[in-house]
Image (tube, rainbow, N blue to C red; front, side, top):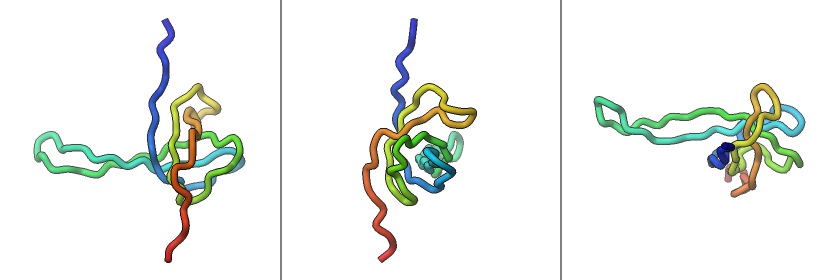
Length: 87
């Protein structure tokens, strides 16, 4: 039986690490087990960007897929919001 892989995450691009490769920062809030406080956790995920359309600061949607390399097993679905810079 093959299991469908359809995990998607939303994050911000923090690194342009070569041709067709990007790194996104994924942030989430979790409740601490014993204290009950809300804690912000983050992780960096490398993903494949076939057309090099995402840039630093862009908000992107990424999807889990088959491995492209040792560290890349996510690919770009769409750019949700283009970063406009600090005003």
